[in-house]
Every structure is written in structure tokens, then in C-alpha cells.
Amino acid sequence: MMNHQYKYIGFVGCYTKEGQADPFEASRGGVPHDRSKVGRGVLAIAMDASGKLSYLNHGEPIISAEKLPNPSYLCILERVKGSIRSNRPPALRDGGLCIVSELSEGKFQCFAVKVTPSQNGELEVHATAIGEALDTGGSWPCHIISTNVGDAMECIIVCNYGEAEGVLSLFGFHSDSLTDVYSKQSSISFGPGSKADRDRQEASHAHSASVIPSISNCSSMDLCCADLGSDAIVQFSMTIDSATDDGRGLSFQCIEKDRLAALPGSGPRSLMFNPIFTDVAIVSLEMTAQVWLIQRRVDDGKFIALGEPISVLPENWPSDTELQYQFNHGRWASDAVWSPCGKFVYAAARLHNSISVFEVQLSTTSSAEISSTSTACDIDGLNLIQRASTNGLTPRCLCMSECGQFVLVAHQHSHDVSSFQRNETDGKISFIDRIEVPNAACVKLIRPRMIG
Image 1 (cartoon, rainbow, N blue to C red):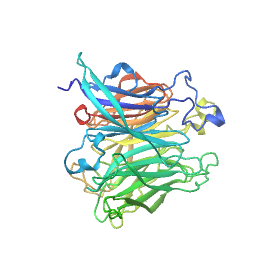
Image 2: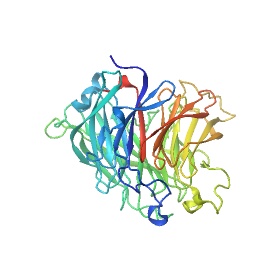
Image 3: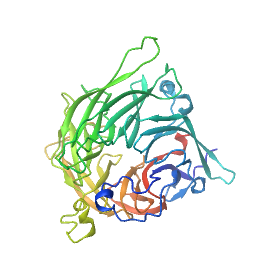
Image 4: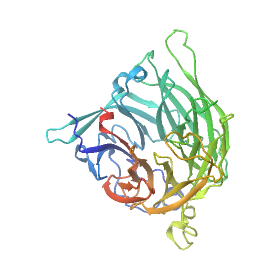
């Protein structure tokens, strides 16, 4: 029987090479940190009901750097049941991982995951590569997600940050697939950047993708991509094609539908839809260290800005005498995530090493209330209620637990993952624990019963 002392299992991606993913490395020698430590591969960790963290597999990588270098970002494939089970490669139907290898020749690899109790009652995690690593169709892949396109196909979506340009690549599998692994369906090149910042925006840079929840008159197969290099949120429509000539293979196309321009030089990094108000999304603007609310119009599903971006930094920080000032005046945001209740946003600021907690402000003219049945509302903006230290250096990735009680932070330059308790009433967070993970870049959680 599965050991239930752990509330969640976590998987941590990292950089296995030094000096990675730091835009100041070439111009300023990089953000100061301990360079003697580098990642060893993907680690499995556990979190108990109090938020305490511990290693699984005695802290040894479940996927080594030799097998997959620079495994910087991953997505978890939960165990699937029912009709959609046939739309997953057979070896991955009980759960697995899809992981990018963030290198100039981009790759991603799928791994089947098996979780078993050991003789002493601890959990052991085993990862087995499924097929060969696949070419991502671009360079420096930095983000990967999975989604089901209706009941027809499971899709893996990879964002290649890129050198000459950003590239969005899509891979699929369905019940009539001719192979036992995902196959490439489409690649979309994003072209030149906005050039608002000549050092970072000469080219487009696909940084992350998010599937758009279904609303009235909008396709349930739309997705958005945050393009850091072009200062844009790019919206795509995904459509399933009819059977191929052999009568077996399905494929889909991804066609650009619309663009929402962000402020020049702001650098959109991540985008996440509100789990309750599904017409609203939060965008993290990396280069101006801001968060930005956007909203879909009900009539055509296109996006509009919902107010002005809001800074995640204290006013007048840093001063021109502080070390952080030399790094883009201290502006270097990373992740922004919603609480499961849809009432709060958590946004991380690298260099300042903090999480800003914002509460949703509803319009005074709106009768909408945040509830489990709400899907749309009138939002005035966000109200800052807390700015908490992350207790580390360079918070690169935030992970909200499914239950909403915990927030995890992957720190790239203090080489650790930290856990925070979240007050579900007022949204504020407090530090609990940390565990060492060199060059931590990404952390994802899943309940033990949902994988392997």
C-alpha cells in the first residue's frame, strides 16, 4: 500500500551547466552567487502535511545530467483513466514526466514514473526513458505543458526561447497513432523582436504557453504564448485535421489568431488563467518587474488589457548605489501564479528575492462574488497585501499546491527549494522549510496517488 505520510511528491528541474539563463552573464558577469554548485539532474522530493520537505531516493537524481543535460523545466503527466487513456502513449498512461533539455539544440524527453514503497516505508521513485529524446524544433527550450485537444488527441506544447527567433512546437498522440510516442505536429516561428531593448529583444523569444479555458463563443482549443522578445501575448487557434490518407493518423494545426501588445521593453514571461474567473489571466512582465491583468472579450474571445501593469518591487528600490541597480535597475521578475480560490496572485521578483501577494479587487459596480461557480466578473485590479522574502536568491519558479495551502519556490542561485504556508483566508504566506537543490530552476507537485 502507498505510504501516505507525504501529502505531495515534487519533481525539481535544474541547470546542470554553470552560468545558464542569466541575461546579465555576458554584460555584467552574471548575478553573484556560489558558482561551485551545479545541478546533477532531476530530483524527487516529498512534502508532508506540515509543509516540511525531504529527499526521495536519498537525494540522488532520478534522471541524471548525463541522460538529459539542463533539464530546466518539466510537466507532470497524471495517471489517466477512461476514454482519454488511449490518447496517451501506452508507457505513460499511469503517469510520467515530460522534460526539456535547455540547450542550443533543443530536446525534450518523456519518462514513465513508478512510485513504490521501500522496505523502510519510504517512497522510491523510478524514471524510465520512453523512446528517444525529440528535437524541439528550436533552441533553448524553456517551457513545456501537456493538454488534451478535446477527446481526440493529447498534445505536448514546447516553447523554444530561441536565439534567432522564438519557436512554438507541438507534439501529439491519439488512439490511432502509428507509433508509441508523441510525434511532431507543428512548429511556429515568431520572427523578429520588438527591439525595444537591443540586448534582449532583437529576436522574438517564446517563453511560456497556457491553454485557454473554454467560454461562450470561444474555442476550447485556443492557447496563448508569452513572447518576451516581441512584447506580445500571442493567441493561437488549434484545430484537429481529418484522418490522413491511410485513414489512421490525425493531426492538428495551430494558427495565429490575435496579438495583444504589452508595453515596449516589458518582456512578457509567463501567463496563467484564473481558476475561477476563467476569462482573466495574470501576466508576469520580466523586464519591467510587473504583473499585468488581461481579460478575454466574451464576443470574440480576444484579449484586452485590464488596467495598467503593477510593479512587484518596492518604490525607489534599488538605489543607484546598490549592487542590484547594475542589473537592469533591479528589474527581473519571474513567475506569477493564482491561488486555487482565484482571489490572490503570487508574483516573484529575482534580485529583490521576494514574493508580492496581491488580492483581487472587484468593481464597486459589480455584483459578482468570487465563488466556486463564478466564471466571469468585473475586476478593478490588484491590491498589494504582502511582500515576503523568499529566503533565497533568484526565485525562478513558483508552484502552488493543489490544495492551496502551500507555495514552493525554486531558487536558482541559492541552490534550494523553499516551502511556504499560505493562509487561505487572507492569502499571506510564511516560510516553513528549505531543501538544497543546486541550480534549481523548476518545481512541480503531484499527489502520490496520481502517478506511478
